[in-house]
Length: 350
Ligand code: MRU
Image (cartoon, rainbow, N blue to C red; front, side, top):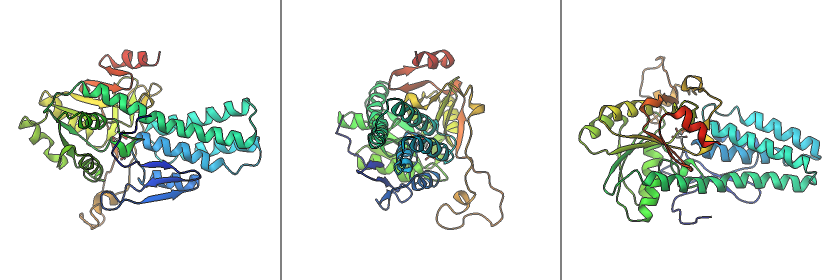
């Protein structure tokens, strides 16, 4: 396991509980919440205390363990694992990593029961699966970073949207992984972070974690992306994703689509970085990806005070879909793939 990651860890298993960094409080306060039940984990995911597709999946995996650890016989335990997985799957709809991690925990529990392990050993083996999901994510992200770094040259300006960094994953992040690696190796890159309205993941999280890591990062409001591109300051865009459909359409934080259109208009490559667990071959196109809608207050009172008239109609989708023809390449731990995505995504799994 690599150990040179300099950022904060969002999810820490500490023996008998999950210590979760409350990302709603960043960058002002660094507070770890001790979670001991699956309800705690559900609530943390729903209310964005933990967010980012891989971190949601990792947390949910621990949630399954927490929710089933008091079972008193193997049959009851397996039943409880399945129930907890079903329950945690209702926390948020878009990031497929959540469902991927829950399916993996259910499959592991079934295999454990098949192997007739005694109950306490079975529970430990399921916890080990959650720990493995987390540590594999760290390795995966370093590989994504290695591949993505080959796309940039020293001195490049790179724009990113939302937070696909260490805070959104086990460590390093996906879209931000190349910046950590570049920093380790003394390769200068200039990162532009979109603020990312309405929840400000870019301002509160990406700007925070890259600044902490010593990366050259400049914060801009979302509506400044076109202007900085027109000035010639941006050589590439790189973002994470919550789900890639089988045809290469990409769901990511609301505003990503607009950035992709702007990148196209300026002849700038638009890259998407994600683990294989974010690719969902069962969802044919972006049109079938469920898009979460969140509360109106995120828009009308997001800055801690009311910024819109009472009673105003609000539309607040948390994600949008970027069509595959705007995606220059998708970077996974297995390498960099380009169109035709329907063929090349499928080939990644053989
Ligand atoms: O609503 P969020 O903060 O969970 O949205 C997060 C994103 O859109 C990220 O870009 C995505 O999950 C990839 S994280 C590696």
